[in-house]
Each structure stands twice: as structure tokens, then as C-alpha cells.
Length: 241
Image (tube, rainbow, N blue to C red; front, side, top):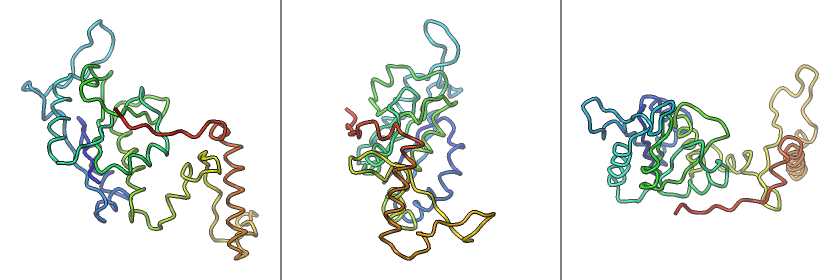
């Protein structure tokens, strides 16, 4: 997979992409990251990419030309068309179904917005899939883009240490109706710690019983902590237009 990341703060993204699972994915050949500074496409000598909003109000607005020029130029850097993704609090709430869909795309272009927002005409021109990482606002799209990249890359073949690791994560586990489930509790050595002991079934060696216990725990934990997950209908994923 190729992931192009467009930002005005590439220095925020360099170290995280080289560390942990993200870095391991590069070493294994599963992914290539390409950082692009949107300021490189600014037309004025000061590399300005923002201006005051029409109608007044606080903050600054991302200019059309630098962003659209950057997207179009980066698109042409590889023959494979990119799935364009804009990280924005106004987008589709990110869920595991969408992450799994994105992990099947050969190329992603993650666009990190900034300031008060992006000129709406630029969004209409590039027609990205708009994604939100939650009902809160951060200073820019760089951290959300890194979170999305991490969620996607860990699903690529041979990136994680065990082939079942991703399938047993929270939200990847699902019940018979397809609702996402939280992960079950986990334990390791020692068997007893501060008066708390490991459930006996995990020490039994009975793999069928262990699997049944874990399944029961995932359902119970989801009902207690996130009942909303089991009340909603499983979501289908639509491709961006």
C-alpha cells in the first residue's frame, strides 16, 4: 500500500511513522509513506496557505489553490489512483468497518486540514471521503491522519506478529448479527497478584472452554460498557463518490 500524507506540518508526522507498528510495516514492505508539505504549492513568496474568512469571524481559512494544487500534483506521482481522505470533525465517524475497507485500497491520500477550516470550494473540487475520529476538535488533521494510518496499516498482511491479532481486537470481534464487540479481559504471569487470581479456565488447557469463556466475556463486556454497539444495526460501507 502507498499512503500519501498532505500537511503543513510534516515534522509532526515523521517520527510516529517510523516507530512501532508503522515503522515495522515499512520494513516489511507492506506500506510506503510519502509526506508532502502543502506549502510547497503556495503561490506567494511567504508560502502562505490561509486567509481571513469572508463574512468575518475568528480564525483563518485554508486557501483553495495550494491545497487543490497539492492534491492534484501528488495524485500524478503514481499511476494508481488514490482514495482521498480528508480528516475533519464534520466527517463520517470512523469505525472498524471503514478501517477494514480502507485497508483494502492500494493507495490512500490522507489530507490534514488546519485553521478554522478549508474553503468549501476546494472540498467540492477534490471530493474526498471525509472522516472524523470522534465528536471533539483538535488543532489540525495531523494527529487524526496518524491514527487512521496506524489503524489501517496494522490490518495489512504480515504487519502484526500474529495473524489473528487484528481479528481479535476490539471492534474486529463481532457477534452473530455482525455487531462489533469489545475485546475480552487478558491475563499473564504471575497467577496470583495482590490477591487477584487468573480465572481457572485459562489455566485448564481446554481450548474449547477457553474460547467459549472469551466469547462470553466479549459479549458481557460490550453489553455493560458499550450497549450502543449492540443496539445499532451493523453498518454497511459505501464507497466515496
